Image 1 (tube, helix red, strand yellow):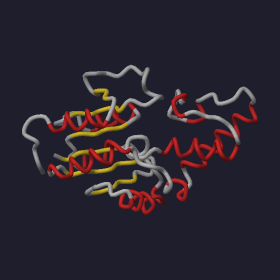
Image 2 (cartoon, rainbow, N blue to C red; image 1 turned 60 degrees about the vertical axis):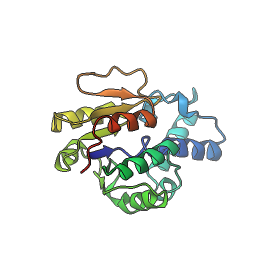
Image 3 (tube, rainbow, N blue to C red; image 1 turned 180 degrees about the horizontal axis):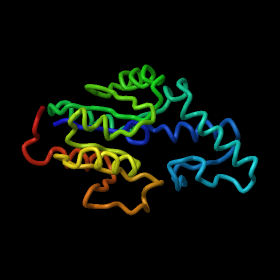
Length: 201
C-alpha cells in the first residue's frame, strides 16, 4: 500500500525541541503536555504580556529555523513502525507543510534517523490533500484534524483511512468519525495497516 505521514509531531518531536530550546533560552518552564492549541500563539504560557510574547516568539523561531529543526528527535515508536511497514513492502510518503527552503534539511533529517521513505513532499504551506491525491495514497496520519479534512475533500476514498494521532492540542477535539479515525499510538497504527492480506505495492 501507499502510506502517507505528516512529519512534525507525527514522526519528529518538533514542538518538544522548540519548548526545550525556549525553556533553556528564557529560563521558563513550558510543558509539551500543556499545549492546548497546535498554534503557539493560541496557548497561554504566562500572565505577563511581555513574557508571553517572548515565549511565543522563541517557539516560532525554533520551529522555522533550519539548524534547530535538524536537532529534533524522532518519536522512537515512529521509527520502529515505519521500518516494519517498509519491510512488509509498503511505500512510505512524507507530506509536510514546511517551507520549500527546508526540503534539504528535512530530507537529511529523515536519512540521518534512518527513516524509510519513497518521497518527501514539502508543500510550502499549501493544502496537503492535492499532493496526497497525486500520490494515490491509501492512508494518511496527521496530528492536525484540519489537514485530514483537507485530505478527505481532495480524495474521499482511502483504502486504509485517515487517522489523527492523539496529541495534547487535539485530545478534546470533536472528530467526524465518518471521515477520520483517532489513534493513540504508533503500535496501533501498525496493527491497523497490517490487518488482512498485508497488501504490497
